[in-house]
Image 1 (tube, rainbow, N blue to C red):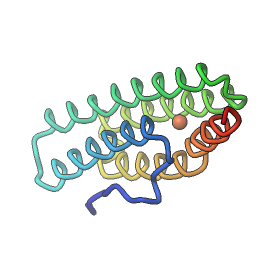
Image 2 (cartoon, helix red, strand yellow):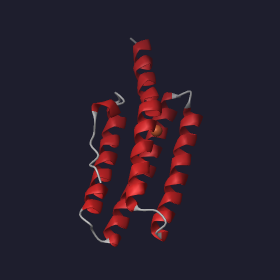
Image 3 (cartoon, helix red, strand yellow):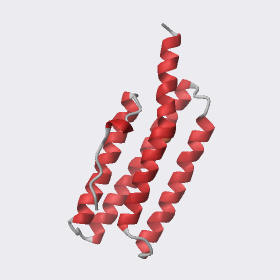
Length: 136
Ligand SMILES: [Fe+2]
């Protein structure tokens, strides 16, 4: 599988969000390397668990930031997070049952991450910037 690298186009412009996203990218890279090196199933499933837990943590962290900011599109964004967690759980069940490969799971996560970061998370960063300009 092709490596996944952090790229400047993934930056939202908010340091907190970007720092957590970079950790997410690192976890995905670790899983890709493990898949490519044909590591044992148990280790792959543990890496996936790490990604699942980190995603849950990161969403709570991002949602708390939005609450703190009185972010107007909180409900829409929150719903997107819930939908992803649901999809992630379904996909993981498929992987466990052998109906889906780890490669398909990783590709799905990368696609989702890219489009959500560029389309939704960046809006939070823009909102923060505009809010800080209001106070100057
Ligand atoms: Fe988000």
